[in-house]
Image 1 (tube, helix red, strand yellow):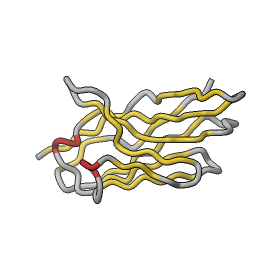
Image 2 (tube, rainbow, N blue to C red):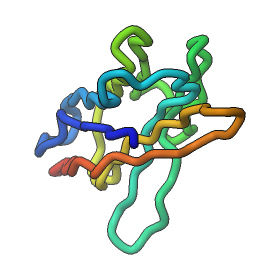
Image 3 (cartoon, rainbow, N blue to C red):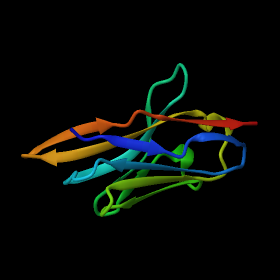
Image 4 (cartoon, one colour):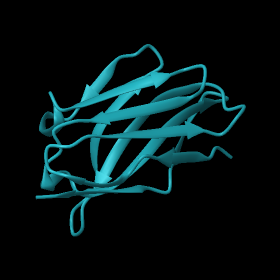
Length: 119
């Protein structure tokens, strides 16, 4: 079982910055894709950004130019640098990791971290 531990959420004023981190449990191998999703109250969970083991990224249009995703493969850790935050970025942010094992892809989720942006 893979555990994902998130950190870095909190309360920030509009225009501010936060950095989220998500680390997979020690010994995890073959982590293909790591990413961040978010879910605001009353809304569906949506992709914010993800990154594969080669460093290729997929970033949602609504955060392009403001958020950056990066990854440390040696530590199985993914980061989300969030700049110029807006009140509409308020949500619970979830880390997701896809692990390839015996030819199958397994998906794991973190517990979520709250990001609140005040106007």
